Image (cartoon, rainbow, N blue to C red; front, side, top):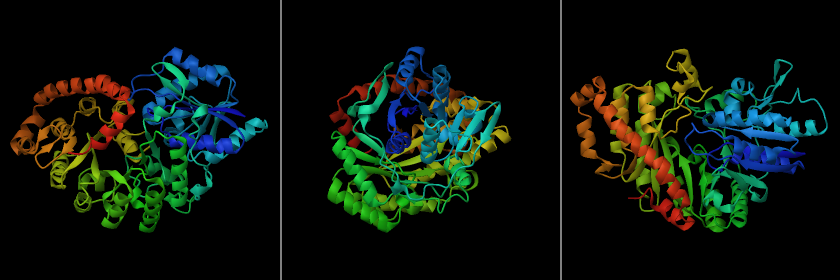
Length: 510
């Protein structure tokens, strides 16, 4: 079978579709990968000339697969509509297809929900042998004005049984500046996003993991599944050999610090001995302890991202995220011990219409207490279709139109989110402007003393009641964001790789 897989991700790091490619290749199929990368301005879609080029790559295929997130769903739909003229079976998979299959089946005749490795191999085999696809688990099939909704199969418990993600770039293509060309090693910008496990036990209401956990009830032995340290190191060494320009690995598990201590110890021993390259990872406050961080730093971890998300009340009552302010501060103390070797970024979510003014104030005060220095990343809330928070918002009228869900906005599009949601605008603007390098005296561009002044009760009351000054400042913020998106980002992407590496090493340091 000749199969073409298409990713609509904004960066060609999509490990999911690369793993799908690997299992198909292992089954004996000929696979091409096309990364239809566009900017993070999700209002932009593919133009006809780009789609014509894609159709030429796909025209001799026996099966086409496409994946998207909610933010790139419109792009995926445009591709599907255009490629239907080829009369080739198209299967729509990925995160968005899993959490919102009802919407996806309107556009694609086959939708894959959940983990797709087994389903895609079964689908390819059935098409190749001209057999019925109607009973393949994980697939929804539109047939004669009805929809067949097959259940998901048991989850993959032994992740080491999967082949390594496909980075044989000779059969890969990428869209750049309106042209689809052969993939080059430098398109990875010296980094690999690497998943060493699957699943998250927290299942926060804003996250797709809450739906995955419901989807696979009774179909799994455990929520969390890990690749063994040996499997991970084997994969990393293969990538290092195959892609000599790599400068670091970005481990993108939802929270790498959840791994058992013995697993982390074994991974770090092997990594330090055999890989000898810096890496990044993600953690969470509750599972951050001194033993794990010491091992990671010693093995070459130079950057860690810790998710805080909201104030204690918001985490508990709105996101249903088991985490306290005390957890955050304790993790901060531990991480600060390694401040000369480890750059720490804290993630928070703002522009949540369910927040009260005091919630935002409490979050800002918490951030002021965390040991410095660190980097603050402020992400604005989006409602991903199908998540628990999205369902709640649609039921109570917080989301009246699809635009209100905000998933087609970039997380960092500060003014756009604040103006869309129009709640607690003054406080949300302050928090958004705090992003950046944090020292004892400064949050990004704002002095700590100024924050204290802006948070005086009388000033908060005045500005929440009269939003006009906030709206004026948002105009300037909008212009600054436009300059960053249209000028600074493209300039950075065009810089030599060596400069990018240097910049990446120092960007979160004071």
